Length: 346
Image (cartoon, rainbow, N blue to C red; front, side):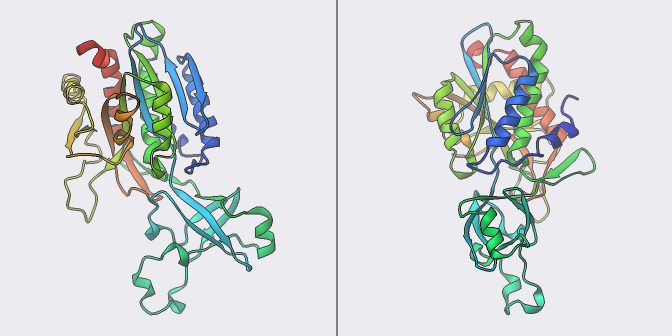
């Protein structure tokens, strides 16, 4: 198996909150350079990281995954040094109390009121942002020397290897799919260097998906691909849920909806069966809440498909994936590219 737990955990070491992805963009550039197959690697004004891999033909397939993550933004600093915040992206407030955070490299915690002094009924409610503060342990005048309104607070990266090939941590939405794309390119490396790939490939690691998908909109416009494959996480079955979500370890999810080209989707399913790649098909009526909602309508239109990775506990510090599902996603991308994508069967 090419996908590796240690390499996946390495993807989680650096935070990338929406709008402040600079450090992670530099990290991704180095990752792409290490593959030694990219003709060009660039970072744009939105911190989208793009790369081009030439093939025997100009027809270009774009592999896309967003790498931004949810976080917090400072809205007020009180006189006694407590910091008010609000969410950037859809952070789950239920998981925030007592969470460890970092602001400009300074460690802090999100304050929690002890149950002994909580207002009656307060323990039964999810706190609103106006009821949350961050404590850095410093007096007000010292806090204001290091923190300003508008600075970002990020959850301290944490992760754990669970049993049965499972990994948990923050920001696996969507760094797990970033890793899947890197793994697919690594699988293709010898064929790329030997000039055996018919189509050209471009990569878009996009930003700001959690706040509206601005990175994918501008990045796809600039790359102008003939075809795009959007990768993101999707809900996996977990306790206390009844919907027929995908299973962890159940394989890559091939998405079918009105936004994605049905011919490409059928081809992906055929390849998955032929190559014995574990998969499941998810059918939705319309949008799926990913960058697949916008990329198909870039410029005069882009042929688009979508692959998803099952994930439990979305938008919490303990998001959980199965390394084998990442392997299945990477194998399907590799096989589809080797088949020549839509260019070869249209």
